[in-house]
Image (cartoon, rainbow, N blue to C red; front, side, top):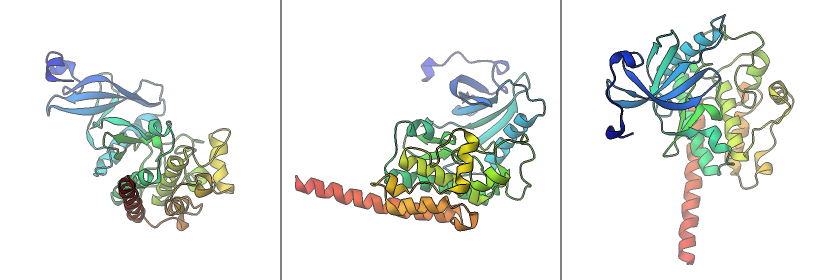
Length: 300
């Protein structure tokens, strides 16, 4: 929206928190609505996430929402959506003011089909760096999935939605309803699905499952519902990626399978290690592509 198209200046009483002008709805979720907005104090675009009106007798949803803001604010990294502010609406609903990223979710992108190995490796590099920053800040995300990744106009990934996050030194979730599966069934680690426990290695499993989906065009495990899908990872490994997608890079596939090892101790030691390996794979694939392009030009 250009300056000429902006509405007349509003009084502070008309602005959310006396500061934020809501422009339009940018996204919906089960828990909240995200608006594209303008921070009138700093004159910059922001995203404002407002908790939806819903029955929440135990306060679980509101506690999780507030915890998201504090967890995400602890993590400062270019591949993590930054939190700028928190507040309450006039009717008492909490809101989070975040960095505005022009783009779409990875879930929307994958709905169009699988990604080439080089792009998957670069995606893995950025998200592993985001998780490394989170883990260094003492935060486990616990819900790494395509819907929680925004891809900007330059193709760079940004991790968001720390609603299930917890501090690494914190006891396991005490604000989750009994019987609730933490994380998404397609990407949740075996230990999360079975025991509700999570560590940095749990995030690596989920990232591996996300990258498997990006490479194959489908999540690693099919099923007849979330519980069935989650239980499959106790009894079987995901289908071999190279067999499933013959043109996928074998080194990338091997790393993804290692990240999805059933036992946490068998996964890579850290998100930092994953990021370094992903970057090496991406660099090699880029060099091969560039060389092929040059050869193609000389052939003509």
